[in-house]
Image 1 (spheres, rainbow, N blue to C red):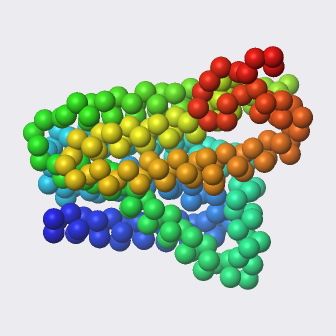
Image 2: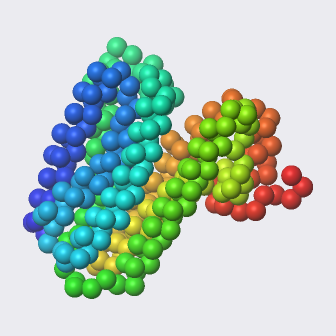
Length: 264
């Protein structure tokens, strides 16, 4: 238990440093959106850090690091490309925060970045618990959870690729992306991102005492559905595409993929 808490404290120190450097870079680049990419990358970083000190079964540690890194690095790469392609424009969330923070912008954003670092540490408890599991075999729950996460990662990658292909066509500039997975869900990427985390949680249940980490997938679900995911995305889409997007909303499930409503 002592080793577990030392690992957790080490993770907090690591993320405080990472987010401090990110804040410094964001100030120089004059674009605070970069924290999204670093946040995603940080899960691979902190999991690798934990692997160095965790007391668990080595094959389990390697498998967890591999799965988390594949997800983390893909998401970070995707976000980095998007942020760089829009630079110097920032995500609307950070433009709103700039106005809210006003003259206190510098230190307020520093605290915001540190909050992001703390969230990485808390959410990564989902990985730290099984990394310290010394049982020399993988349970059925672990295999099922890993399979769900990997399949969901494929789904998210397909959704992102379909959206990028649609947007890359100049003829679709004012149109609504309703092809492929986007025909069945207005936000299939968010749905699969949520399922990745539920897969992580199912895998964590293979470790005794890890059930409390259910807060992680619930938090991600809440953020995606109620805070930084669907609400701002839908507001922006309505502003840009108006009635076309309202018609899309009327016939298409918001989150869970399902068949379009009849008559549309």
